Image (cartoon, rainbow, N blue to C red):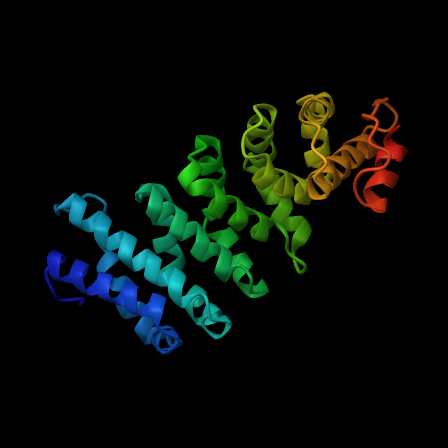
Length: 271
């Protein structure tokens, strides 16, 4: 595949994509560094190379989707992420790929980030900034996988504070809250915001962006009785008000009997 023409490479990549989707044994074959390198090698072309752009985008889609497929087995995730070509290829796909390619690249990052040791590699690659940019673009085709990847990268048992602080520093709170204020993708964005809100830097930024009034307004207008949504609202409000406890005097909407006991306690505390 590495020495073939672009059209041949695209045809072979499509076959690999189909095989690794349908066959567990085929996915397992990529549990070694050499096989992964051969898969990614056709994408190693300069950005200014003269080639058929449509064919290259098809090739990129098929290879990135294959990376997603082979990252499903737990046993492959360390080998795949630690291959020197893989994460840069996923980052490039987030930047230059089609909407479907970007979505599949984010899905691959989500799978790879389930392994604690891989999260640092992904953070160091700059992928998080590109995921945040995609959230800002608000493309419904990519949003689900992008938000799942962001959530996993921000939820980190080993280096949670450092990685969440990095997310805040590259604009995650600002971008997410703008979407939330518009009522966009709340079910996807609120969990991500919840992972960040306990950080003082995030709580301060949300306070400056009038997040308390925004969240209360959404709660009152939506009448959402979904326990998970209420839990997210309450957790974020609790974190902001804890940070601004001497300055803010927030009033919650009267939802005393909805949500979990933990969520109700947080809402009562905010009052």
